[in-house]
Image (tube, rainbow, N blue to C red; front, side, top):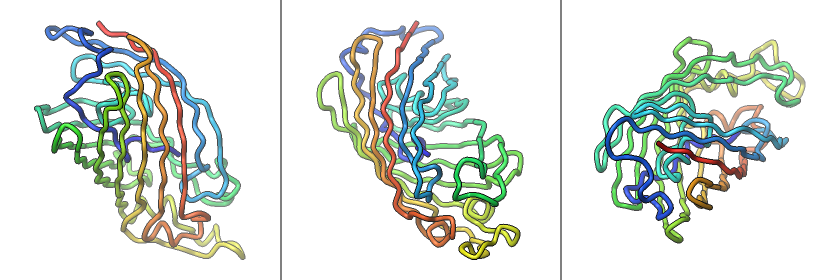
Amino acid sequence: MVRADEVPRNDSPVRPASDKGVGSSTGLRFESLIGLSAISAPEYTGSSQRDISVRPLAAVRVGRLRLATSSSSALLDFGSVTDQSGAMLDLVQSSRWKLRTGLRLSHGRHASESDQLAGIPDVRDTALGRLSATYLLTSRWRLGSTLNFDLLGRGSGLTWTNSADYRYRLSPDSELRAAAGLTYGNATHLNSYYGVPLQSVTPTRAFYVPGAGLREGVVGLTLTAALSHQWIAFGNLSYTRLLGPAADSPLAFRKDNTAAIVGIGWRWRK
């Protein structure tokens, strides 16, 4: 699965030429986006089997509140903000700092998603709360920290991601970003996603109860281009390395995972 919120896109005070003069500096800001994306990724992080899917892109922002599917929200700002799915509210925003809270529905993980999960208990759907902070070091460098936590106690537990990314403007209408991040998971999270309970033990899958620790490291490259005043396209390549208790799991058939996503969206602003 591609987790754009764990390898974020950079916050940038500079907007592309195609965005100049769009929107109003006064009143309530409204923006929306619709589009499509194609994704090639492992069936789950750690799987040796891959899946290709097509997913919709949709995002709406009204003032400081935005609703978005994964890979959609950053495109409202030419990719210049951290991409996070669900409902998001900017609490504090200055020239360098941004503090944001959010809520999203998590699909969890289901054994039916991969043959390699056969017999493993599902991670139930739940609601995740999110708190994130970003700091703009320079016009190109940004640091970020994001905390996700299961509000309903359904096994998703808690994860904490710390990241850094670098932005390079290729032209007034296109830019390249490189990002890297480390994600920590508590014992509840890692046991739900990488543990093997007694009832799921097989001759090739041992009993395993992971503790808290690092879950993965991710690096990625994202190219974003404004094709016109309203159309925008992007492509992302990412590499994920399972770490610590997750890498030691019998469910980690591949410790190294790659993913690719391309998409195009149409933006409307008022």
